[in-house]
Image (cartoon, rainbow, N blue to C red):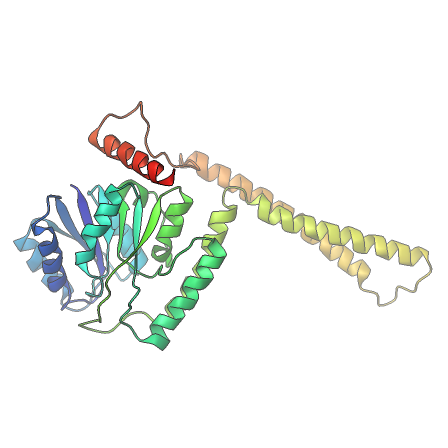
Length: 333
């Protein structure tokens, strides 16, 4: 299998067939073998029945039905982990993403990139409730993470399967896939894509979703900066508290020796609290280090990702990876 199209859907009864037909037309004249994988996230309308009719007519279509409504991130993760294609393409099920953009994304993957993420430059949404909050969130995310991006909210992406399946997605983490993949060493590029007005139903997004994304940004920043060594964060705070405790303690002793009335002076209390806080932060840092060591050893995880090994694999997949690696290296030079 060459390409897997992963489409999470929730109550998209009117959209699933037109979307399937558009994707099928795109690949009708292409050589890639494709599977179209819908993930039904507990739809309560007629989405399930429509999907059953589609899979009965086309064996390239697969459907995963989740037992309940677990959210878009969970549905996307289920689709990615079930994907069989060499490249995984993710897209929304509401017809706002244009399947005609997929061939250009696949061409960029063939040029050596590991992930291509869409940029809805001419977005067809309401400015105040959708576009403006998205721009603010993307600006803040780019500044916090150091990853230059215009549109993390665009679901249309093409990713090498091995890169996609390395990622752990939860919360609203599907939006941070480019950042998480880049953190794992993937070569990422942004591509301008078409965006269309919603034809059926109503959007499931709102300002509350933007706020949840911003909260997840804190988690992503921590994962990127401190997962490998939690002591760097907590130890640094502990050192600051210890330094403050030492300075305030020295000032307290100096004032006491000099005959200053210490009645009501908070320095002694601050010295004790800062000293205790430093011990607490150092302890949390040590526990974090032990937990990360246990995680990597018990789960057989490694804090790195191998692109390809010239000695261990002579398969077509390794040859493609090697050619892609050389192509990107030449462009970088």
